[in-house]
Amino acid sequence: MYKFQVVDIIFNDFLLEGGDDCEYDGVAILDDWTLSGIYCGNDTPPYFQSSGELALVMFYSDSSVVSPGFSAAVNFVPGIYKTYHDYV
Image 1 (cartoon, helix red, strand yellow):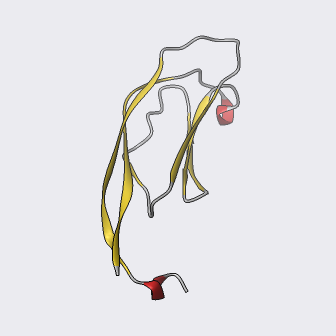
Image 2: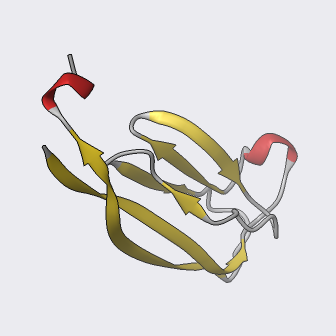
């Protein structure tokens, strides 16, 4: 049995170019390769905690409108205990 860490992400400031379906600028959050959400404009992402040891934050942008951007705090916190049988 071992204890793993999960990823906590808290967005502090968030202002990107908006648009239908966040097609111009945005932040995509993936939880263990599964899309958790896509955010843009002033739609600040909610508090996020990964379900496992992997989280991915992807920022994408076009070159047409300049916005302030975003800042986030990332922390690694203890997860739950896992055994080998949890993975087979």
